[in-house]
Image 1: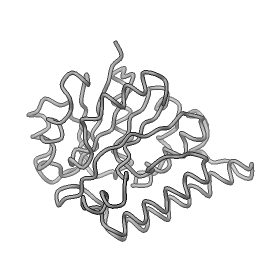
Image 2 (image 1 turned 120 degrees about the horizontal axis):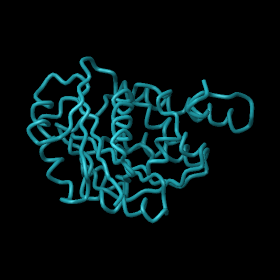
Image 3 (image 1 turned 120 degrees about the vertical axis):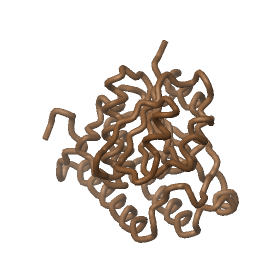
Image 4 (image 1 turned 180 degrees about the horizontal axis):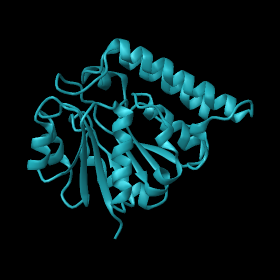
Length: 248
């Protein structure tokens, strides 16, 4: 039997963690690991009370830094498939078995949750207009530059085959929000098959979300990653994030 591990990069998720856990279909995962990134609330106590494996960062390392710990811990358990689910209840954990099924069949190596099925649904369910526009524009550009055809590049629901995490040098990525964009571009560079599945849009007060300033910075950093990708592909410059794990 293949081992499925869910990882949760957490920060101040006391109000939504239990709801997120309850939504994971019973029997669909073997272990859940929560990495707390210096929360100021009861996230750690609640996670331990739910029986999760908990790793605590004494100080906040950032969203990307949190994921680095998540994936290292998941690989150390011997996981064959790793699913990242935010504990803020923004992403529907009920789709985990379907994402794993596509990985098991070898149809995909990476699965992304696509929240943007229609403009009407995205906006009706609370996605701010500026985020919707930025999501659409960036996704179009990213698909064009990389040759992919994903419905969304900026989802926090992601599932990976083990080989993806043992191949991609994610340790060299940013500790900030742009980690996700870097990782997907890396997956393209290393030739992994990327696909997506539809998931509902959930925007509400308790769901973690970056503010306008951070969104702008994230967008600019994402474009910068695409510039690096272009320079790498045409042979002008090498970048550590596109090299092998043992390369500097």
